[in-house]
Image 1 (cartoon, rainbow, N blue to C red):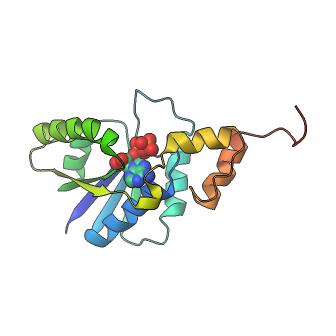
Image 2: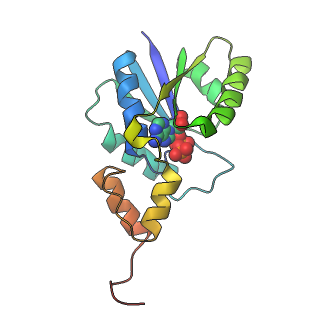
Image 3: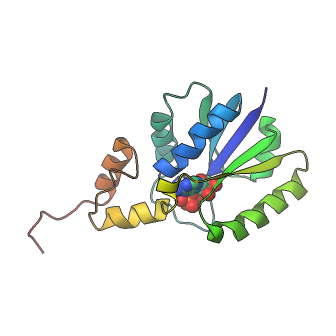
Length: 165
Ligand code: ADP
């Protein structure tokens, strides 16, 4: 069985992530979407909230599951018996950090390959941070994230009644 891991912080999950997850689910027998704690980022949503939003968003994909981990991705991949880590690439600017991480993971777990999928054109500008910025100032995120995620963003960033200052 070919098992792949789609790791990330998913704070929150966007249509860009879901595009990569769906494509991975067609290329592999089983996919584990793993929510990782990134010590360099202060998340808006708790790990539990992020896992819950992801579970709702991938409910239509029978061979995909969602899990969480706070350790090293390479250890997690070995522990799950995954041969492949799937990551999305949006722009050249993603490349350097991804290249470093892929090299490091290869060093730590030589049997695990990192594969990159090019983002879909329509999501190449999309990131969780940008979605949060738009939501924080009351912008519409309906085209960027699933409905349930948009609703949770509204709860996190309540907007003053329009017209009021
Ligand atoms: P972000 O960079 O938005 O905080 P994550 O750390 O959650 O994202 O990223 C998880 C994975 O999803 C990474 O491999 C990242 O490159 C990929 N990804 C994020 N947004 C997109 C997108 N719009 N298109 C393709 N891949 C994406």
